[in-house]
Length: 156
Image (cartoon, rainbow, N blue to C red; front, side, top):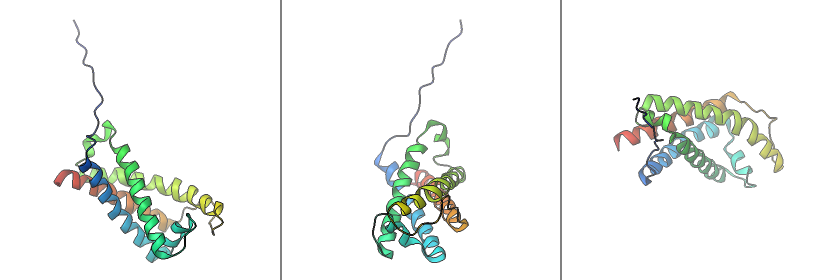
């Protein structure tokens, strides 16, 4: 008689440590991406303009807020059982993060941000806005988010 093996879905433990690692990785990744936005592109203020606020400090604060929010979404996606083998593998997680960052560049920065800026009356590029420097910043964000979260998961 054949036996059947029922596979139960596996999920990452919803622990404070897991989410703290994601938040720390997201802040570090957002900071590095912010340097690209501020120093190279001169656009950190545009993030504040999404909320009707002006200034560099406001832009940085909202940018880091977005980094944590998108990091939390990444953390939720990363709990998918098929990605569990990557949780402590830095190179594999970096690759997953780069894919995440590329997706953010194409959708969030390329389409949503220009439409949002235009909707609030701020100067906005035409959508899709696929600036290569923005792409580099988003790939950097995703790679650092994925790699650092895996490193923190593995070594802490």
